[in-house]
Image (cartoon, rainbow, N blue to C red):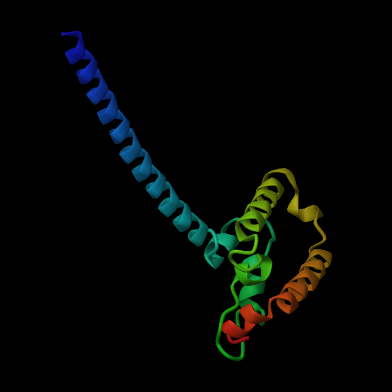
Length: 141
């Protein structure tokens, strides 16, 4: 009789373990797919301009040569402000995101010298473009 109890407890434990593995796998898969969608959504131009603390970030981009190119290709925010995907992309994205959130809540945008900041960012963008010639050729730049 004791053998029977231990066998039924063992089978319940195995079933629970199997269900735990299946549920864990499904939850992990859902988490990865949702994470991929979040990364893709937060890389769009509309998302970037939705909470940017620069007073005219979206307007200056729309009127710039980055949006109105001769070839008709639009250069998106993440193409200049982030490294290519796979080269520290998520780390840079998180770093910029935390910095922007901090600036949004704790800095007064009126105190920022936007012209000096723009010049520094342009210099950094030019350096990134020179470092990533393969990325630029693929996009037809």
